Amino acid sequence: MADTATQPPASQGTLHISDADFDKMMKDAGDKPVMVDFYAEWCGPCRLAAPIIEELGQTYAGKAVVAKLDIDAADRNFVAGQGVMSIPTVIVWKNGKEIARQTGFMGREKYVEMIENGLK
Image 1 (cartoon, rainbow, N blue to C red):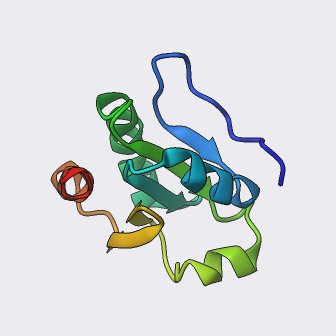
Image 2: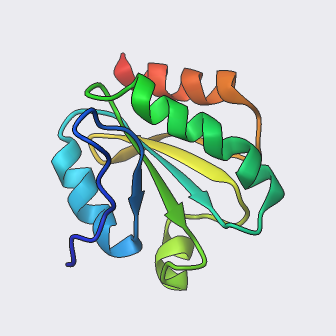
């Protein structure tokens, strides 16, 4: 498996990952919650979510893993295997188990709630 995730600066932040990076990212997260934004560049609601996801990556650095995965660059079978049918879809996992999912853009408050629930 290639380790091609775009790593943020030492202060951490939002990872930009590929489907090939997913399993390693999940393993490396340990018991931290992992939030992944499945998006596409052409998606208007995804563009609304993007700055929020980036900000949450900084806000929760060291406490949670926040990542973005471009579905157009990912293997279709991987995306389908995650149950992503429309975008944006944001999923939070903890200890490898899905604990929250939001399809469509619902705003910062919902994303914060999803991460906070993962920190409990």
